[in-house]
Amino acid sequence: MPKAAWIMGSDSDLPALTKGIKLLKDFGVEVEATVLSAHRTPNEAASFAALARDNGFEVIIAAAGKAAHLAGVLAAYTTLPVIGIPMKSSALEGLDALLSTVQMPPGVPVATVAIDGAENAAILAVQILALKYSDLTKKLDEYKAAMAKSVADKDKKVKQEVTML
Ligand code: RP5
Image 1 (cartoon, rainbow, N blue to C red):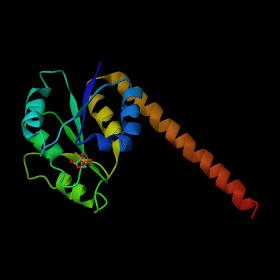
Image 2: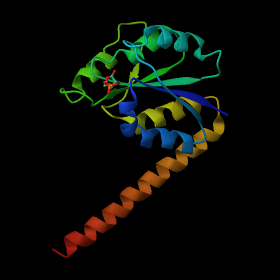
Image 3: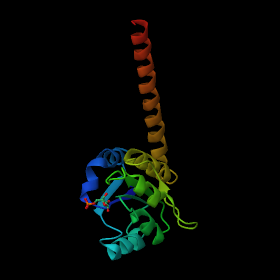
Image 4: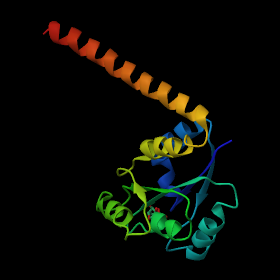
């Protein structure tokens, strides 16, 4: 079973992440959620990342707000792919976290999704894991087909509503 680590800087991040975590689990990925902070528990964060591959993780998702260095610090200690989610948890509405997460120096990439972009983080993680687990490719195709159907349904509904105007 594919295995992902979903790290968050604080328990206060969880409500904005649950939809993404659920989506990742719905794809059949084992998800281990952990609270770690680049600033409050730097040693634990470094050690988690350094041991992540040996502990069976294949991708790391890291969500943090404010001066968000979590994803970057984890990426510094592992060669596993790290997906960063900047959280909208500050007076700056997440722009601070976005810049802190995305502006990594050459050599230490963090694949950064949108502010509060937990669902895209989940899908990107599945796309990475699908390179190894081919059944995930089929599930991604089904996911895209369902998305397209939902847009087609909306198009039909809008056309009907506009006809009635
Ligand atoms: C960040 O600071 C966390 O990721 C969270 O988004 C934000 C606030 O954390 P708490 O003060 O609620 O623990 O490190």
